[in-house]
Image (tube, rainbow, N blue to C red; front, side):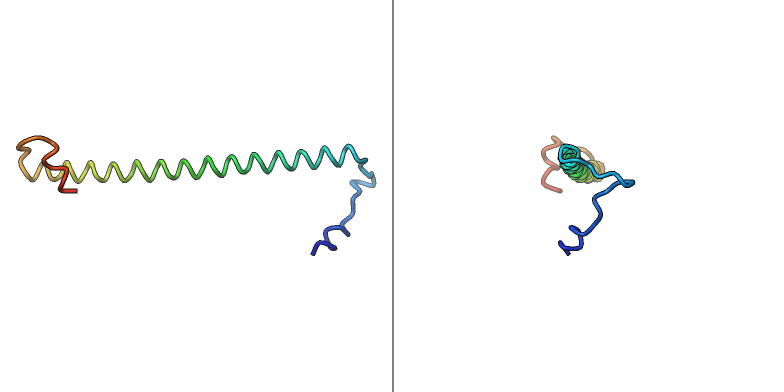
Length: 83
C-alpha cells in the first residue's frame, strides 16, 4: 500500500512543486486535520449536552406528573424520590 502511495505522481499540471511548497502543503494538511479534530470534539460535546438536557427534561416531566397525581401536597422534595 505504501509503495502505491509513493508511486503516485508528484506533479500538478506538469509542474513539480519544490521542497518549500511541499512542506507548506504538508503543514496545511496538518492544520486541516487539527481543525477537523476540533469540530469532531465540538460535535461530540453538543450531543452530550443534548442528551443531558433530554434526561433532565424527562425527569422534570416525571416529577410534574407525580405532583399532579399526588395533589401537590407538601414540598417538591417530597416527590423527588418518585423518579
